[in-house]
Amino acid sequence: MIYVGIDIAKNKHDCFIMNSAGEILYKPFSIPNCRDGFSCLYEKILTCSSDKGNIKVGLEATGHYSYNLLGFLLDKGLTTFVINPLHTNLYRKSLSLRKTKTDKVDSRTITMLMMSEPDLKPYSISSYHNEELKSLTRYRFDKVKERAKLKTSFTRLVTILFPELEKLVPTLHMRSIYELLKEFSGASKIASAHLTRLSNLLSDSSKGRYGKDTAVVLRDAARISIGSVMPAKSLELRHTICLIQTLDTEIKEIEDEIKPLVDAINSPILSVPGISYRMGAMILAELGNFERFDSPDKILAFAGISPSTYQSGQLTSSYAHMEKRGSKYLRYALFNATIYVCHWNPTFANYLAKKRSEGKHYYVAISHATKKLVRVMYHLVKSNQVFAKAA
Image (cartoon, rainbow, N blue to C red):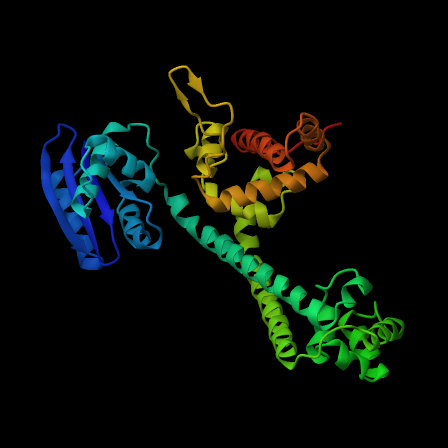
């Protein structure tokens, strides 16, 4: 068996090749991050063995820097492993007490790690193409997070300029309120606005839900408001609303791209009440192929949800913290999906209530329900069954 370890960097990649007998076939060498460099590496690999079934290539999961080389290796039909950098870091430390870390050392460490870990799962073509879904779901995650910050800022500005408004409407984050404050950005401007203009603006933006009556209430409240008159804050408010609306449009566009990809996967996990396209897509994107995992516990470990273990001699920790070492995106999606599943499914709702009755904090109880949900999803995918509602 031929083992190839590659340490990924931005402009170059360091490689090391040895066989299963421990014989070094190529000492550490560097290739440029370009087509010629990839071809040079491939030619050297083939000089070691013409049988691609006897070749294993490993590289660290270093984000976008490894993406192009990974695609090249998979297109060439080579069995490729993407290894967690934390795994290689711990393995390197186990080999020596010296604090030695170089790119050449890392390439050799990856090679030796592959030799010592026969149970490593190879990266598949389907996982590589799943990167598009992963990119979209992570991009949406960042946009939603950005929008949440802007909404917090928006609420702060309304509290300064027209604090009474929040008590007069179901929520500040409505299109009609955004349109109102874009034109009349403060209580003083609403107070002096013409009633007909206010009525028409509210009616058009709310599709007839709000009209003259609401306009009268808002204008009367604005006339006795304690809100400050601050042109700088009014300008900030208008810009914040524009940014929120732009993000709304972008998020909608991203979700339109996500939906056909999720439909093509047609995963049984979407049959669970409470798992929407949004969270379901993120779960599928981060997990990729369920065949990579031998048990639900490995999915929990991958998400960093499994409890840490500390035991030494006669001492055993009585309080196990969540590891939180895996994919933060998967952990976020599983937690949020669990909250909705517990709301819509009686079985999960009862399970959550049981954990709460044991004195557990709400989020601790949710983490237990998350583990139950992962076991259910794993069974559905493995058996290719849809979720059956309890009678």
